[in-house]
Image 1: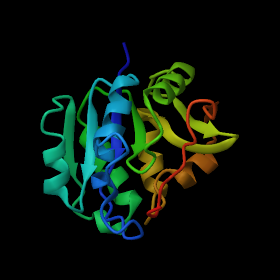
Image 2: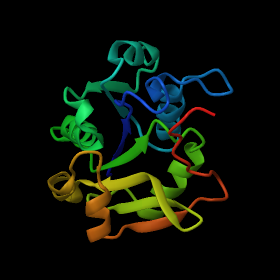
Image 3: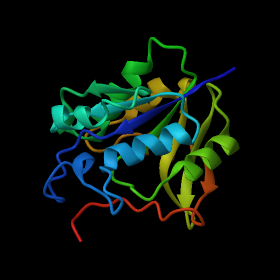
Image 4: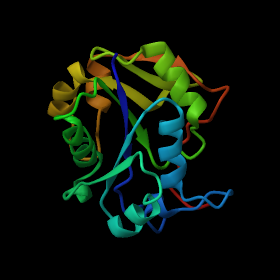
Length: 189
């Protein structure tokens, strides 16, 4: 049986937000890093690798009571999303994971239902390639089977994670606008 592991990109400093987005608290009082990790886990990922960088000790402490999370430090996190993606997928390279479900810490309204729908549509095989769409606009999470990891990382650069690879090898788009906005929150207010 193939397995999916969540990879939560939560390493950034959140300069436009004024603090690391992983530490921002939602209306329910939970920090975004916990909300996003829970969405991946409850949506079908048995475990969730959380890529940390800025404020890594604070972020890691917020995960201490979630035994299915594994914080992974992206030492070069300031280089952008590509460094975080490389750290997350690198943490899975020696495991039996067949696919990664890539989530972002700054899409707080993306819940388990979105993850579950995307996984149901794409499957969890090594060849799986899909992503959530909101009103036809591609968003997160992204399901990335192991067969795609090397090529994705080969094209990732700076703050462009899987974007260039997903343009070259278009994924299955799974419409989720009825479940969430998928909006990437970049600033306060």
